[in-house]
Structure formats: C-alpha cells, structure tokens
Length: 151
Image 1 (tube, rainbow, N blue to C red):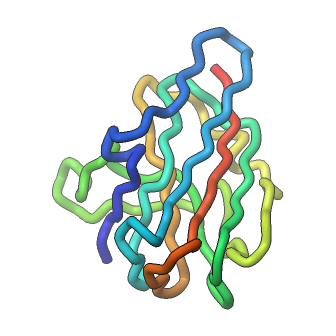
Image 2 (tube, rainbow, N blue to C red):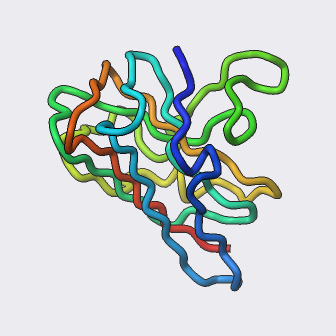
C-alpha cells in the first residue's frame, strides 16, 4: 500500500480557504489518471484538503472514464498533509466519514451524517480515497470530489 499525493496534497494547487464565518466554499479536487500515478489495490489517494477551522456541509463524488466494478472508501486521513507516514512512522490510514464502498460508476452525494459531524480543527486535514481495486492509467479517466465546507 502506498499513499499517492494529488496536486493539492503536494501544494501544487490551492484549496479555497474560508475567510468569512458561515460563508460556504467549495473546491473541486480532480485526480487525472492520464497524467497522474495509477492506483494499485490498497493505495490511498490523498485527493483533497479540508482547510483549518472548516466544517464539511456537503460533498459529491463522480468519475469520468471506466471504473466498472470499483468502489471507494472516502474520509479523513491520519497524519499530516503530504506525508507518506504518520509522525510515529506507522502507515497513514483513511476513514469512511464521507462514504463507505461508494460506487465509482455513479455520482454520489453524502448519504450519512458522519462527515457533517466532523469537528473543525486548527490544522488542515487530508481527504483520502481508498479504491477497492487497481485503477490503471488512461486518457479521460478522472476522479472528482466536490467538497463544500464553511468556517
């Protein structure tokens, strides 16, 4: 298992930061398998960033291209953004606060309250996607996460 870092996790793209209390913000995180690292079974894709002091109030996941038979668990990751391991050297993990076994061939919005109950934090946190099987590189294959949050 490896942690695969998206452009947002690497700091190459900027996550929109809440600046006004109560105002809603959205960032669309996209992982393009034509140009990015393919995903092996068990890999965790560090796709998005939940900014410091932000609370999730909605999310939608969808794909482009062929993802037949694949599901994903999507949630908060342990450890620091863009790290390969936790501070103590153990492997990073990814939860299921947003989705557990979401079908990657269909568009899905939040259907359970777990993500809405995540407390805000003083530090930014990673949103991880753990797919049920290998995802090969290919033109037009993308994973999208629309993350809506507020301060």
